[in-house]
Image (tube, rainbow, N blue to C red; front, side, top):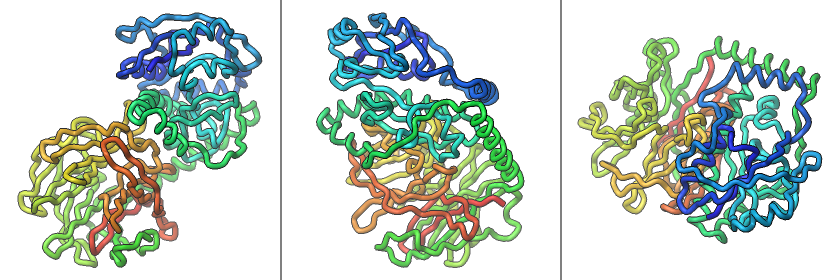
Length: 542
């Protein structure tokens, strides 16, 4: 696949450097030409003073490393030796038009893709100069707004999520065909932090789309693209940097609500508790109608700031055992506790696993009368597997399931193939909650994990993070997932797995389980089923 780059300079933002570097290293891809704008101009009028002052202050106060907007030279990419075509486009107001002779030169390189990282709004024949069009990012959700500034209006408008879209450009601004879409949680306080994470995330997207084309073939890929397009065309505003008085009003509201939020968080500490409901109708899916009740820890058993969460039940020898995270507010660290559930309370809870790092999400797996536990240990940069020596109280570490940072490991076995689902991040500057990765191996012990060819299989903070054991009902597979759009662990989505193979993955939301507002619950993020019981948890501030 032959690629042409459109740039204003070889000195680019770090996220662009990373994106180009990944394309440069991608198999079956060749960057054949770099087109440099000799006369770059801003995409619009100079931003109003107060907006510029705020952005400068916000950047200094909340500069987050690694910085997506630090400058780097593309020539520092190892082996870089790409031909350069310097051009001066015809510039009309905010748009750039390529001269006919420049388009002829570009076409002579037979590009499959043109990647736009520079120039202004592109119009005219350049949009048709490559087989697959001109690809460009819109850092924002184009069903929310067009224009810009990127990642700004979501913060100011208190929008739960911020999108990033890779699109094939058309003559209409920010209305091109969507090639890829990812959704992250909006930072409530800082535009700088909000922008930093979504720009880093976008640096990994182009190679993913190229791999999709190579795996699926162009015809099937184009069919899959139809699922990404909006089903209805709605009018959305064309936004620009706010004028002085609007910016002043936005700043006042931003400072007020975040001051109140911080005061609330100082006075009301986070607290989780375990919930349970009988599995009354094991063939039904109406989980949101279940009446969950709280399981209170024994009196005086928890210190200030401590709580129970992440319940994983298992029925064995006519008893129901529950494994869960016990978070210690003094050490700021979780350990794994087990207790028998007698239908009314958790009996004699005992610590069964504790490490020098934080443990949570005690995923339990039973096979051939052996019991295995795979807790989350992302802080240790490894995922360990433990085996029961004397179930349920004695366990030993038997190996490393996966190297590197991974969150909420969840195992599924289908047709003698083990699948591992985890949250990971493509770059250290991104959030760990946005993307779901899948791996498969013929064995669970001493595994050889092969990444799913479409990784990440989900790139949406509203349904990516695992929320419990994958289960089957009426011969269909369902994956509990966290929706952390509003806040971490806000609510649970039940995702029906439609297709799962080494080359395919598809799922859809079939049910949403909201926290119970009437009981002042702010979130719920674990959902695990046995034949008799359904365990969940609830988040409060107290």
